[in-house]
Length: 313
Image 1 (tube, rainbow, N blue to C red):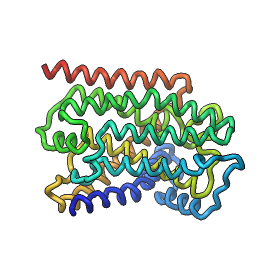
Image 2: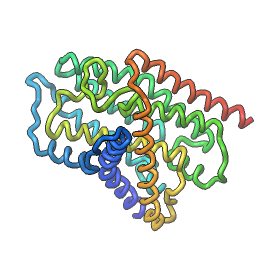
Image 3: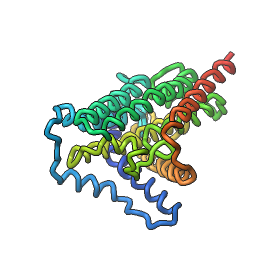
Image 4: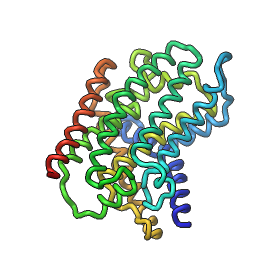
């Protein structure tokens, strides 16, 4: 029973905190640029406004175009549900490991790319090609990062990784240091952040994520925007689970979730501020440089894997 309760709490927490994390990152970016910061609740207001608007669908759109927002939202919510954020007592996590988590991200990417090409617009096809290119390069790097932690814990289960790393004596793992740098690079690319993409622009020569959702409106656009916030939340929680797993409640200590919640909010607040700081200090790179950027991330992740194997001998 406690496992079901903790699982439901994790899902509700992801739904509630994901837009707040996006709003916090935007607020920090505005402060760093010496601009007037938008309200922290602006993402919630945007979602409320979009859900109350009518959805306009292209005349020749197939059922896939209408179903894609729900499928993408479901994939992102399920990904958040299998990542231990409050407790390691998660029934869904027993049926999905780190490899399945990467598969959920890939499944969502395939659906949104197909939907973008479905209506036959130039921007949608361009965004789909760019999105698939990024996914083709980012997913292997993310797998290598997860494998670096899996070698230490001898398991690909995120619950086992968190339980093992959180209760070991504090130690320095050189392999995880390389994996952390690679993970940051992959997270920036996967969440359409500077230097790979700019979520605040609609310039046709640079946009990637925005080109995928230009034809959506109303509740469909609201679901996609919410899914984007859930994806950022999921990647943030993956980083916390791999590199800062302390504070997550054990399966046998349900009351410890009361302390895990403020710890999670504190770590997410620091992560959102650091994300804004990094974006402010970086410049948008040319689209042709993105493969080199993600290839470097893959190389760093592989180096981390090899370093751990060499030191383990």
